[in-house]
Image (tube, rainbow, N blue to C red):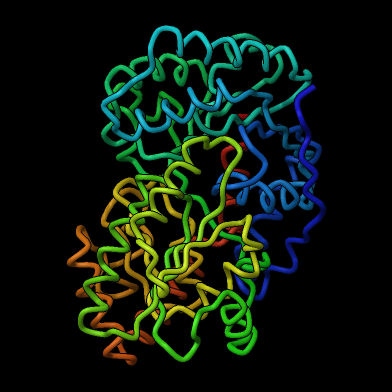
Length: 412
């Protein structure tokens, strides 16, 4: 069988003070006629990356409101993950697509995983491209199939998207972060296209309120001087996240403000074989600078540590050049920190330039906005307050749960 993921329990009631009573009541009203609905989430990995983070909260909350939701992870080997990483990059615009042999590997693993899915589901939600081919082998295993896209498909490699679109069309519905990601050939309500941005869990260890003293203590353990300004980016080590561009921006800031430090913090995911290679090249690019702290989950950096780095940072950055959504953006804004992000993908949904943060398109712009924030603490506080309120209204998990319940209702 596929690998089931244990998610524990969560209570929707605990979110009332953050999300507001009207939204919590709307969720309960939507959930009532859906009681007992059997829902399976299928993804490629149980840790590392935004999909896993979302599901660790969404699945138990679905169960709490009466939906019978489960989460299983597909089985794969290194050859499969090498192929799906290349596919992921191609779909986000890399000019190299897959060879015929690689497409065969992709199809073989999807067919293999399809045989492992149990039947009798009302809804199966397939997350991202890795397991997208499963449905065509076992369409009768669920009454409704939904494909959930978490990546930026606005400028895909033509060959990769040509292979993907026929697979998406086989689904009863597809869910996307923003309209710009929907391939033109899929457009229109008749295609079952739903727009639904993701969200963060404000009560998770990564996002819960941390006292300034606790945040400073954790940062101090990793050699960061809490009395000096800190720039920080939290993300996978991936070319699209542009950690080297962040280092370039930091170096420009350091010319004007020599006391500044940089933390690059990321997790290494099981389905990302390129991650280590890029981690090592980022280390080499830092060139031994003692004020650049490059850390990952194997340096004992977990959710609390990430929370501390984001909470302590004077500027939080996500200088992506491609970004499906970027949950780290909402995480940083939720902590009331001044934020700078790449003007790409789902980041502008979360950041209103000049109001809830800054949007940039180059290391020079990133350095310029960082210096403004570091030199004008009141501006940083104002951006932080506005950013937190924007996330409260639009990007907390209860809103995401409501959107899924609406979709279930529409496909009953």
